[in-house]
Image (cartoon, rainbow, N blue to C red; front, side, top):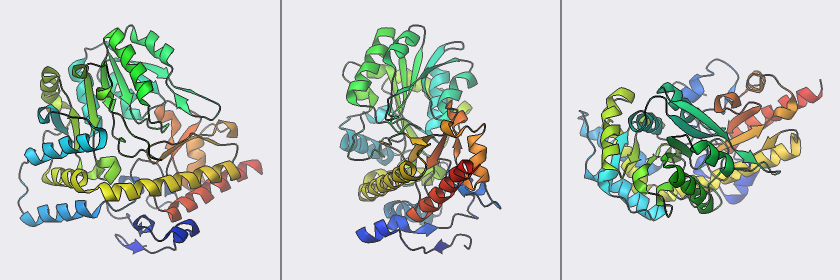
Length: 402
């Protein structure tokens, strides 16, 4: 593979039968400063860890960035009306959610929104609830701001499908100030139903909780499922909800650094805006806005193709695990491109290190407050996924062989 080159690999049989897909194109990311790939530079380890897909983004996004580059002037940039209009239109079209452009506050990432909301809207010593296992920045934000993390473990059924322990959440909420909600949930892949979110809203109302809802994976729901923004749930006071969203996961734009908080409460927005200089660089760059607008305004056909491809990858992975490594349990994935794998039956002290030595780089479950688990990123070509499955399966078989 040459740096920045494209390697043509034969598409897996399943995809050839359906016709070729743009997502079968293997793009060499070495030499591009990719965090995902540079992490294992010089080692025979296939990176399937950080939530960063290996696909080229939508053509409309590339074209928008090229147009912006040809302008040739890249000074300090502020969001113009078109950036706000793109967010408003997207929320209306995708979720039936009518938002006021004045509610929007742009950040360089959803993690920065979380940090700003925690610092601006709670006080030192306040208790903040997070349902675990969960994406690390969400459970690290409270302690990082001098607040108290209260972890409320999710529960799972016999099919390894996770749900919220509402009784435990209700008890913990009695002395808490804020709930950080991950919706859809990373890493367990749940799309919380309107009924589940309604129960969360009832608890929030009963205990006067603020809710920070991380909805970065909102547009990567699979199998026709629909995301419901928490702020739209009947009975919840939208003034007590901050919603974090971004096109970054859906369109693979994390490197551009563009996210948006939807903050209906004017005072909360003012306080969060005041935090910008302490939790993130105050200015987004010109390409961030251009890429986001193009993705939200023109990326829907590409997104639909992506979601179908991801669902096929998920199904292939789930089938391989059930067939070849039944000791491992994979949580049903309803959204995201991330598989949460329970490997406790393998009896490993360090599952992450074990699989890394076997040539497949996964996310460490301990980082998510889920020891005994690993997270696998299937947002890649089927050729890459097939190789990852081969390495994963070989590692488990080596354990069986003693």
